[in-house]
Length: 58
Image (tube, rainbow, N blue to C red; front, side, top):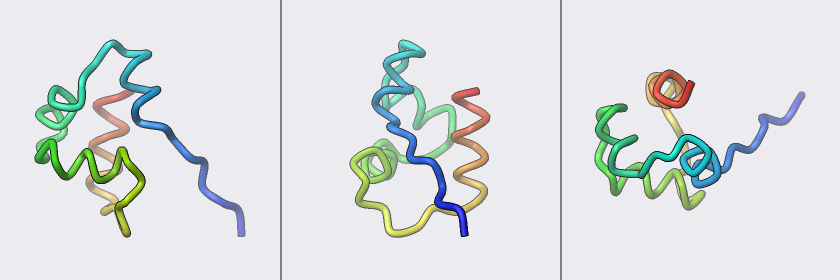
């Protein structure tokens, strides 16, 4: 089984000159929930959330 790549949201945001609040708004989630993902404390991520993040970040 192949491991999933690790994406550092902080790096991706910096490259796109975005902030957590703006990304959270575009994805439709609370900034606190996005912070949990960003800090690596999330136990699971829904496919819909993952797809929304990918769409917002390109």
